[in-house]
Amino acid sequence: MDERLRKKEEQNWLKCWIANDTTRKVLAQLADLGFKAFYNHIRQDIHAKHGILETTTCISCTDLSKQCLLCSEIGNQIWYHHRFKQAPVKGPSWRNTNITKWCTDSWELAKCYMPPTGYKDKASAGETDFNGIIGAIYNCTWMQKYFTDDLSQQNTNICTKVILTYV
Ligand SMILES: [Zn+2]
Image (tube, rainbow, N blue to C red; front, side):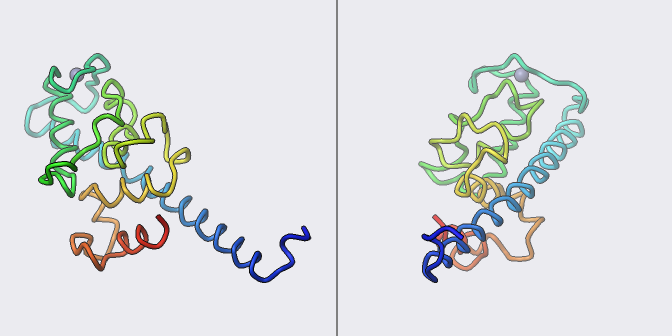
């Protein structure tokens, strides 16, 4: 064993790091599957409301203020499901996301729920750090379905506890 890992304190630190990394991996898998399901949910809703088939995709809209009906509806849904959509300085982190990939990569939806800086280039759950993943899960109200805890109880739910512990 490495000399530095013989001491109890260092072993505890390492265990902490492994626990943290293991938790991140599990949450990354949940977020990956969750946002794929979220995208499918959005597309079913848009189909029901506007008759746009789930197989229809758009890769040409680049500007939030000038979008086709499909992209603007996806944007509306992202906004609608944001836990802090009414807060003046919060709401979706639009600068993180590549709008042209909304129909082909559900992780671009997840990025709208992460902190506003540092996540633009994170192409998958595996590349995203703990703070980004927990933010995506907590800030998207649709993810509530994967928790028994009531995530709307801001001070006592499992996600805010994790955020306060790890971040
Ligand atoms: Zn479009």
